[in-house]
Image (cartoon, rainbow, N blue to C red; front, top):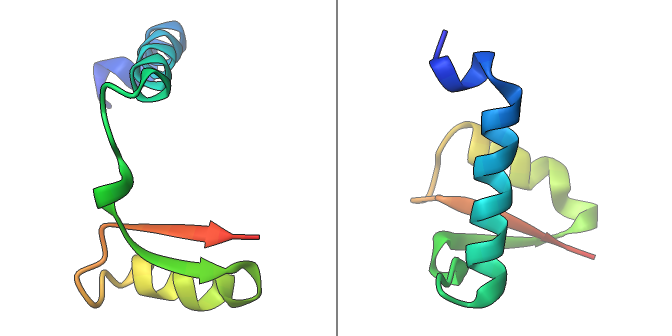
Length: 63
């Protein structure tokens, strides 16, 4: 098991730092979202991501 998974406080601290960096605008994650699906097509989105088809990196679900 990875060390960070055994230390939930460390994981939480890193996640907070990451959220702060993204929220500040220092990092733009938009280019990582390669596919967008409306909520009513979430099953299709999941299948695409689960099977890593069509060059998918990240899927955004819109509501």
